[in-house]
Image (cartoon, rainbow, N blue to C red; front, side, top):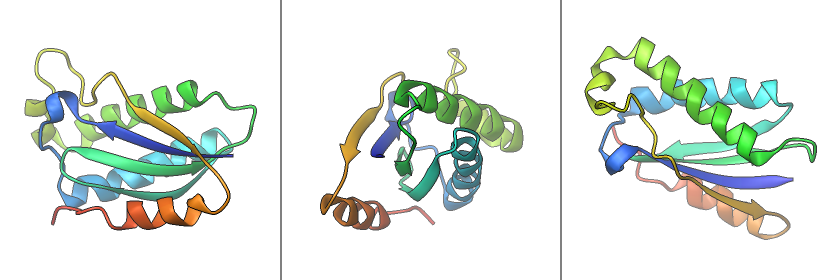
Length: 122
């Protein structure tokens, strides 16, 4: 099963540079592996990220999302102290909401291409 996930930063603040997204991809790849899932595609812009994840049916998408957002937020805060100014008083990098769309068949390649074409910051 495949799901297209989109996470946006709290208040849509422009937070990420390429170095943040590169590290975030590695973190999210590890989280997916813990769920026996595969991060097929990852990219983002300065205020949001897109993921295409292949996951087994036994995995609840909400649990996967909570881990992806929580673990990435914690690691990024520890590894990039400059990001803490974006956490405000709430201590949250991510908005509480997210987009999750199921993907399968022919649209899979279209979603991969869409994610690849995100305007990644330098």
